[in-house]
Length: 229
Image (cartoon, rainbow, N blue to C red; front, top):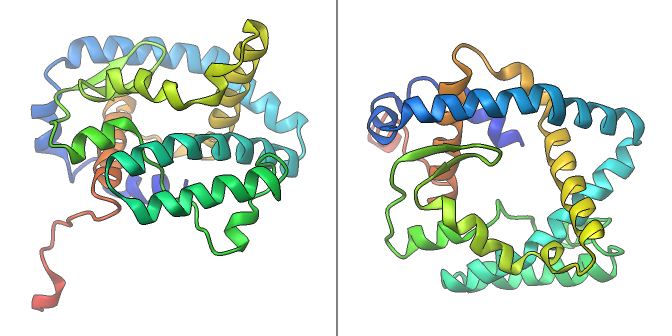
């Protein structure tokens, strides 16, 4: 979450020329963005605010930890596909420790044992490692910012999502909704950071975030190599 705040500093300039080329469907994307914003204004954000108002902070954090822990399975699968064996060992250790000592992931015990939480891996990042270009930017109804490469990988990653394996439909849907509300609640503090054209803001933040993930946190700045000075 701290990364999101940091990325907002350069959201309107560092990718200006690049994003114009990567957004050939801006008309459609803006329509989808308006639709998503209406849903967020009248459904997602109010639900998140009620959620944070009702639940004590430790409980809210615990629920977020549980979903983060379940997501380690997807992380490990993509770590292995990218041949990041050290990271796979770290993420596997986190899942095993937090699932047992952490009471099903309620507590992040692994962090205190030196196994740091990573930024996460998904199949889109795996395809990037394999050399598949991301293609044009897309704003999908209900789903949000994506790209031509990211769009189908969202469904591929569901294959390693334990929530999708819950047999009872009502329980599966309730768990999925809880995950969405928990994720939206974590973003409430950043709502006030959105300035100017909200579509451009969201698009540029998304593209910078994806670049950050695909390059494992290495972002090339606009000032060149500081070692030359």
